[in-house]
Amino acid sequence: MAEPLLLDTTYLLPIFGIDVRLAGFEDKFPKILNAYDVHYNPISLVEAKWISLRLGRGTDRKKFLEKYRSGVEALLADKRISQTRVTDGAIELVADSLLADDEVEDYFDRMIYATAAVEQSHLLTEDKVLVRLESSEKERAPRSTVSWKGISV
Image (tube, rainbow, N blue to C red; front, side):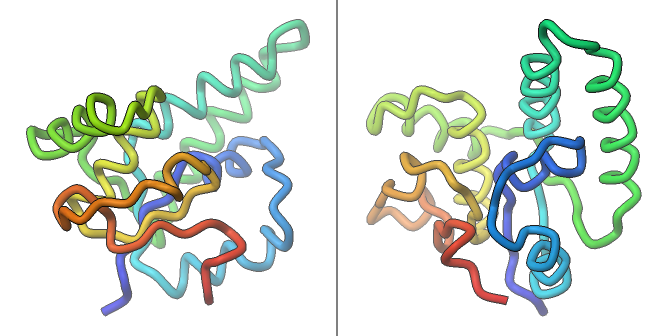
């Protein structure tokens, strides 16, 4: 069985037509999808929509919204990647402790990190705050937290 890997929102953005400027993304991402049991928290869809709306501000928003909708359809149809649950009591407990104890202010980051911790998945993220988090409490930490440069396929 492949190792579980939870994606931060960054890695979903290209599906919505948003460039993430990660070296070799087009070649490496499909390999990741085949090498790991890949998941994402549906909260990332909300964050991606927010990013799409922000990028479309002052331009033709319809283009960004159309790309988002077609991206959602493509993501949901891709059998190599699946959704986790949005939240539950265990995820909320970890997310709340990240705010109270570690001062992680970003709600989306807390929820994604907490999901990886509760699911005991590896977390793929570019967020420096999340990469630096360390916890001696196994239930409060993902299996590992790795960035694009550090993931092996």
